[in-house]
Image (cartoon, rainbow, N blue to C red; front, side, top):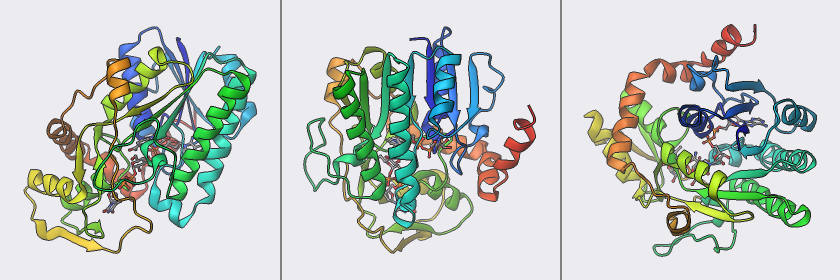
Length: 337
Ligand code: NAD
Ligand code: DAU
């Protein structure tokens, strides 16, 4: 599969994926469809905009006509859907856009992929569709879906639609469900870059509740490699869990960041908890490891050190977002072309 439609490729994981693929697959053409919401940032694609194997198109995944036109124009063989509203807190304060993009948008892409006979549809889902764990156990691909937030409910609805299209129209669809990613280009509303940015500026670090919530952190490049594996070697109709084998409480992660920056733990401030906050996520990724021979390659110690270093060296990227200036980059460098 050489001609690939990537949606949401100006976001955190999508832009890392596009960068990786352009570097490692010299025969691939990537059409990158992104609406450029608040989370989409062309600075994430710096150095890639003039690559002849990368075509960026500013469009909404809910626009079926535009999607079908792109599939025809670029003879698209595979579609990878990263595009989503991705932040749990925003889904609590404003759930409607999560249904529009994550559910209606996925439906629109499925219809286009079916009508245009796309060879493979890969839905980038999340471990949050499984709900929350207690102290023990892990999510396997057989764990029943039990989403708790409007975000995870919208992602679970999309997963059901993907499975329904695969069943009804015998489409070749695969679903990946990954744990928490971290790394460069992550929007600073998410826990790790938010805490990093606040610590760098000696601002309080807002820890929800007791801070003992557990996430399984995976370096973003390992997630991107896993997605490529599933696209190219995964079995039709299958779900693949992806995780870092790296459970940490939020306070553990925050203390590592503070120590690396030489900042005081007195910056930690416990604040009101997230409503309905999932206590623990843990992924059993043995299917990926045994069947597709994938495993995480970057330890948390290495990954967090690289991430901290990147955010320090790319302070302008961070301040452009915090100040809203990243929108001006689009206006001045792209919209005039
Ligand atoms: P992100 O918020 O950084 O990026 C989302 C991208 O989608 C942005 O570029 C945005 O402009 C684009 N987008 C949003 N609505 C759109 C629409 N209607 N049409 C076209 N483009 C649209 O998200 P992310 O963290 O990179 O996550 C990417 C995907 O991976 C999501 O589907 C998310 O559910 C999933 N995921 C994320 C994580 C994580 O830890 N970040 C973990 C597992 C799965
Ligand atoms: O598990 C995969 C999911 O991980 C993805 O599907 C989501 O798109 C992604 O946003 C992420 O969801 P989380 O809610 O786990 O990530 P977030 O970075 O928002 O929060 C991580 C943990 O940190 C969580 O327990 C809430 C806590 N937190 C978060 C913020 C923003 C705080 O304590 N304080 C904060 O200010």
